[in-house]
Length: 250
Ligand code: ADP
Ligand code: MG
Image (cartoon, rainbow, N blue to C red):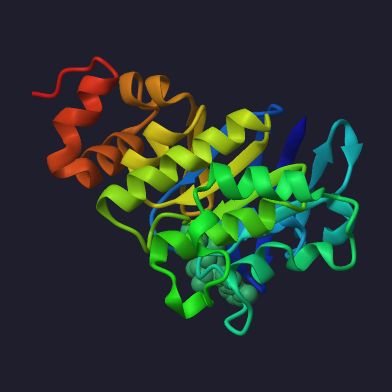
């Protein structure tokens, strides 16, 4: 349903993305995985519609949306730093987008989402009274009440750790499944990508290194970059992750 065809992005002479082609089906969770500076955020912003392409096309349900502005694409993003309004309560932030479009979500839709994300107790708090995990959940709720056709997340877990990280990861999965929501997540953490998504797009220097299921990537890495990137980054977690996919690590 979302198709990228030969996407290329240049800033001046500098090539940021090279010939990126891929297809994402409705309801799939896809991670964009790669080292810092590999072009992940640029690709996400191109899909969102805030960055234009130098070459290539974007199709949604077969329709060419390459030149469709972001507000008409109907996709929505949770930025890496959450970008919440500090002078509003958690609830004020969640319903902010509905001011001008009140028909998108009913009171019950909002309540259901608040419940799903476990935010009932925190609605009247100001943003600076919330923990990192709570802010992340508010940011997710704020985006979700707008019922995006595609949910984009830029490094949603990078500011979190331990138990909180795991619980947000579960919430993202739960929401994506509950709403059959196509979800695209940028991350530099292989463990996150492999455990969270249906498909993983690995990019290296603006080119696709591999696009496949977590199982395919672990069992049949397409090249040395994929093999090394995943192995090196996993380090201690290595045995766990490979156990998960039934692959022995020597
Ligand atoms: P990632 O999210 O994978 O860390 P980015 O997509 O943010 O990578 O950046 C990829 C490359 O593009 C980097 O080398 C970055 O410096 C460059 N870049 C990003 N935005 C711009 C811009 N507006 N102008 C020039 N170069 C940019
Ligand atoms: Mg980035």
